[in-house]
Image (cartoon, rainbow, N blue to C red):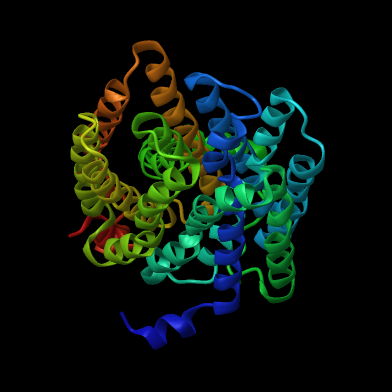
Amino acid sequence: MDRKSFLKSGHMPSLISGFLYFDVSFMIWNLLGPLAVIIMNDYPMDAAQKANLVALPVLGGSVLRLVLGYLTDRFGPKRTGMIGMALTFIPLVWGWLAVSSLSQLYIVALMLGIAGASFAAALPLASRWYPPEYQGLAMGIAGAGNSGTVFATLFANRIAQHFGSWHVVFGIAIIPLLIVFLIFAFTAKDGPTQVAPRRLADYGRVLKQRDTWLFCLFYSVTFGGFVGMSNYLTIFFNTQYGLDPVRAADFTTLCVIAGSFFRPVGGWLADKLGGLRMLMLLYGVVAIMMACVSTLPPLALITVLLFIGMMGLGMGNGSVFQLVPLRFKHEVGIITGIVGAAGGLGGYILPKILGNLKQSVGSYTPGFLILSGIALLCIIVIFAFQGSWKRSWIGSGGKARGADAAVGS
């Protein structure tokens, strides 16, 4: 890659702003994952209830991404991002000062989905500044904001134990959100390739296309798998291996680092090797790792397996969004919201699978085997449809619109 060419091809302050917005939003979105094992001291919960608590923010983010995707196309990603951050202050203040019951905490958890919806504004902010040959890298850099999960898993429980209250964590999280809000307001700019405002009917037309649903499947596994595992692993380490809240969150952090910091690598490799080829490889890795994890081996080994599996999921995120702007060039905002919502649904379903099966059969083994099977299903789907994708993404006269790079020709 020509580094100078990449730097000149877009708007670096907007790319950095998108990353920071995504980063702080992911930190806030994932707060309840590590905190759940401390919160249960105040509100005792069974395995299914704990899974529900950490899954609700993901469900909220999934639904609200559709809303922010629509607003992004209508008002631009900068204005939409500022609205999203402003609304995110509400659940933080409530969690800090007013929550007094598990039912109230469930509402706060759902409202934390506002932060998760940042995806629908942050990625178009980056995408609309960069040409097709740099889409994978630009989207990967902006999307690496999912590294904010690392801050949640690394510091949330330590702060809670230091101050003797998990409520304080919500209050402290307001500080970085305010800083990023100001940076975003003064440095981000909407890109030169803004699309015309879309109507709700446009979403319906996109949803009628087969490829929309296939991309939703792919992203529900990569992004959904990353978010779902990030939120649930602290509970898993605490329940399965008896680790205290801080140690359980530290082991989760090791795994989350892999998924977070390898996302840009996935986007870059997808630009070079082909997004579909990369996805098939990564789904294979994830399927193998999840099958091995289902045997519930010793702590050291399972951490290595989850590290590799999360790395594959993170790299897969970059690969999926290398393909999206190529296939849906004029509907990036809409498809970002739809596919992002599907990713959120995947992140909601994963803890429910693991937690509910743990509650019903007393073991995590069936849950991890199901996750392995879903990854294998994605490989089969890509293998079945990649030929038609290659033909449809090549324009008249044989001029490729990024298709050869996408399919790895």
